[in-house]
Length: 354
Ligand code: DOR
Ligand code: ZN
Image (cartoon, rainbow, N blue to C red; front, side, top):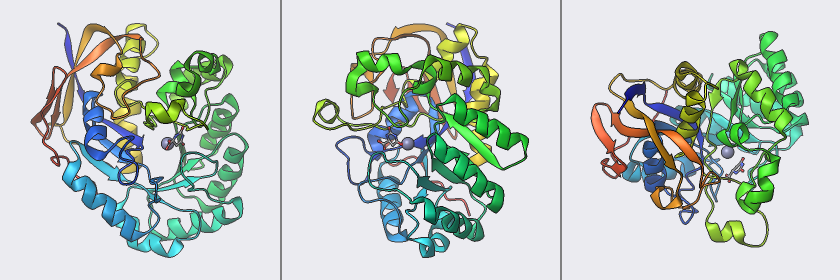
């Protein structure tokens, strides 16, 4: 067996659905999925059924999390541009502000005419990043706002060549932007939607091979791989109307390790994209006793039966991957070994960053 150690990974983009939609996921199942996937810290998005746009909802969410989480969890605040007076109250309890410029799960959406005011209010209250869900043309509008207000802004799940080009250009001009890509945009394309049907529907949608090739070619400009773990039940996925999102916590690292075994990546890329940069961008303290052990030689087939996520499916089901998480330690405590979770309910820490 050839084992290697990596630092505990950080996923800054997950939707654990708790409270409000715990039939899809909850803090315990979601954090067990994180640990099984090699993550020791994750950051939860605010588009809950009742969006996290007030201090009261945020505090309720944090207190539920404290009782259930098995790894460390941080939170983002949300805004539709109508809760600016909550920023000052919430800022110390979150790691950033998330804004949705395009429709996705939930109804947390901000109109373009409120963006500048919202950016300004957040940047006045703290220096934590603003994260944006911006597809296509919205990227350009936002870069102009970031240039003006000069506050650190993270573009989530970049999927198009045109988007990454604009971000590279902004970075070269010294505008404080960072960006993430998802494993599904790196490993699936629009062609897979034909096979996956509703299980291949997410926002942003899967893009063309040309777009995907551009993401791989310019990976050095990408700051973070973020799973955008967005579970929905199998029934909802199969049902009438589209629900957008795919789970990703348990498959992201194995996909990246497989890419290493195929010489498409090196380990340092994984450390940079899934540990060092997310830690820097979102202000997460690291600990040398928080680490994971990987069995590099282990090949296996992704099977829904062995997943911890409550939704119980994966768009990568049936894929043969190489490289498996063997053990996970958080602050020296063994929390996972050989497919078994050893962490206690509520043993993770909620991350506050004042
Ligand atoms: O596909 C997606 N699903 N994209 C998002 O931006 C949100 C997510 C969700 O919450 O389901
Ligand atoms: Zn998301």
